[in-house]
Amino acid sequence: MPRNNEKSPVRIAIAVPKKRIRQAVGRNRIKRLIREAWRLNKHELYAAVSPERQLHLFFIFTGPANAGFAAMEKSIRSVIGTLSGKINKKPDA
Image 1 (cartoon, rainbow, N blue to C red):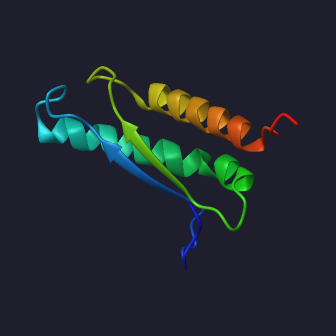
Image 2: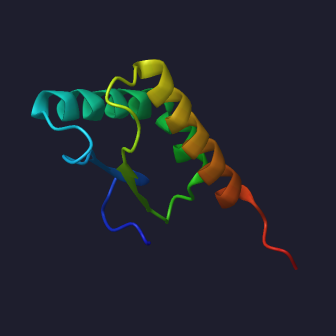
């Protein structure tokens, strides 16, 4: 998607289903962990996105309610690595 007056090359949205984690406190905790893991690792994906393009990501949490920061960061790094690889991959002639 082309970038229109947006400074950020990547925009994200986070969803934590109420069906999986019933209490709002738990859902908010998961969202905070995901946002922090994203904040610490987003620079790798930012470098891969070209200046005239913008990427929109939507994270849907499907893990256990007691997931910790280490698990979140591992998952976010995995997603960023996969996306960076697909963005940098040159199309076959």
